[in-house]
Length: 178
Image 1 (cartoon, rainbow, N blue to C red):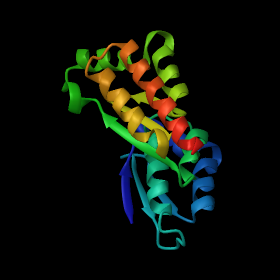
Image 2: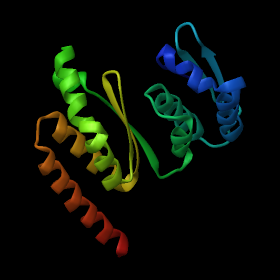
Image 3: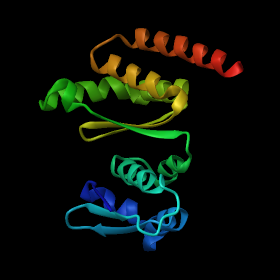
């Protein structure tokens, strides 16, 4: 039995119209979800599960939906080679709202340009929600995207981060060829 708390405004997305999303998660993983819409707490009952990784995958799907991803994007986490990264910006810049806004702006970029470049160069999906940055990515780019985000958070120039991503992408593509 696992418990996860998500923001109350994301509960409707997790349940879906007529319970469609919740039902789909339960059908695909054989895990039972109990959702408390007053507190945002989600109980993951894994007593009837064959796959030992299913509860962890469901926990990541629930967290991803709670952190702003669409259910369609969150369902990518059912693949064994797809991972979920959650970065709490408060650990890097503290609780000051102005610092959080500045760092979120650096990650998103003007009209979402930086976020799009990060997603494109690492085959990842990024969601900036509240005080967190959530990423759905493959094992190949997991460390690369985390490092790139940390570089942006710590104030590196965008050009430096883009060069780093290009270099890492070339290295990973070369590794995959052999």
